[in-house]
Image (cartoon, one colour):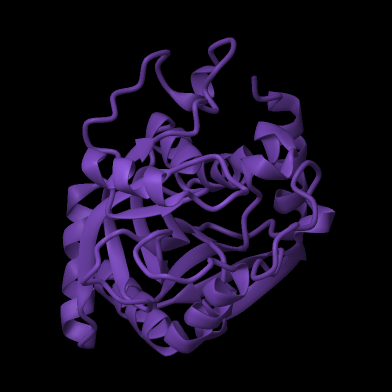
Length: 278
């Protein structure tokens, strides 16, 4: 069960740091995505260590800062890094960014991650619009007593990843000249990488990319009534597809090599959103 008092303490700290902020969208930058923030006009910054309940990130490739920033005239809360369930920090650290995004009055949560690709014809560096997800974590952050902040007791998940936002993201890719994949994101708990047998099984179930994050945040954001968009950077081929071991260094190296396209796509997406109702 999520401790609501801890979430409120985090929101109070952000309010004190950014009293004039009126974000329309909140974005969580996953492994290797932090440098995307360089493309935004920064209006303010606070370290995760100064946000109660969030704390410093425990994974390489996550900068651990919340930026109040702007692009194409759209005020944004940009979370440089995420906390993961496998870190043992509890659901509060995972839920805090979504609680802050909604409490600040934003309508949209944009979630990014690094993922392993299960398509043999896909290549590291591909960017994939998340169309749906499969939760194989064996748990959901909504377990426990019902909290109305997170919507109804039994939230509908028919359209977690907003189809209109997916269309805008696809248009942004086309206008930026960046080919995009579309597919289903499969989330395991981690922190171990998957086995070849697991990848074969998950691919049979419909997984196009596999990872250890994003799904709990998408569940929370969707339940809370936020529009959700998701984007994966395929940083490696999942276990068993290539005859080589998996490492986090490969993940961060691929995102570094793909950063120009990642920045270009995100800036174009924000430019497209400037003409959309938020």
